[in-house]
Image 1 (cartoon, rainbow, N blue to C red):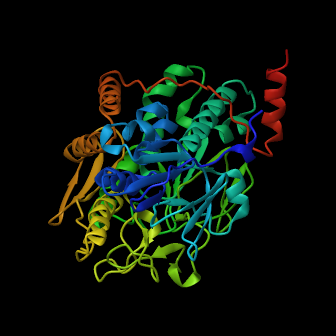
Image 2 (image 1 turned 30 degrees about the vertical axis):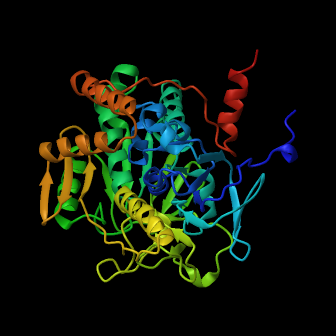
Image 3 (image 1 turned 45 degrees about the vertical axis):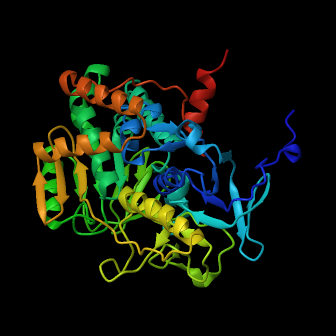
Length: 448
């Protein structure tokens, strides 16, 4: 048996400045790639051993892609001779000690010269513990796999029940949050309902399958332009999505979703895409935090420190143009990671630091086949087929690894011409804690 107390981080000593990066997201990997370990020893900590392309998580959840198509092993990304002093450790960071300049993990501590926090975000349930317990988040690959199993199991059970009320609750899907994740997931589910599911389940009437999109504000895609929101609203209506704007979820007990105002929907699947909060690391003083994120200056230095940095979604950099921080998308993290690598080199060579200025390359969202919206620089707004093509090529370009690009592109081409949607396999059945009925069913199913 493996004894945890005999494990250690096993990082070799070094005479070079040691940069410890917490988080292998867009910011962390772009920082590490640009440093290339010639002037630094680079140590990367993450609780998973891969970098994931999270904008395509919803396609994993709806069986459009397999998980390995949107993930790349971190060790593979840094396996060349350029990264001979790069060290990855699959550990969970438990905190930092700013006085002793150490990072604590479950299997030991490590001293740093420079610390970079790129831990990203986690779902924000706004204090609603019941929703947290019973809803389905969509932030990581395990979340997507759980949701995929849940949806496929709902279809299987709807095909076996003779009770119309139970069948309808299994075919009702509630998506909370009208941002890019919610809109794209709703569009993917609508296309499954139209093109895929009637063939898989000829005995089910999928005209009764309801997809609800719940948004607390008065329009979908609030981060994008009003023009993009208006087009998206029209596309969602064409797809038969039931939109609930200016609506908040009050409670969800695993079978009934209750909206503020009293309206209720019976559903076994409520998907939470309504908001995120910073995935904070213990050890920073309260004055360095605001709104659940880490305050940083224009050089991404954490407020009050010159040797600790934060990049990406976790970083809260206030500027005149972005008084509430930069948008929580990949581009700010990528650009901050690359600039921080340059600034760390400037620090050790006594050169002035370069302030961060975000270059907004635009925003995209897809709402199904030939339906997408794009907000591009110079106030250019696109919709329909051309925005859809732009979305496809941009997402292919930012995938990590040639294999992933090839796999995703070939999948999309296949789906476009065949109207098929991946391999709808229930590899690991999902049973939500507290779902007694499904637990009894699975126990009986698995009896030998």
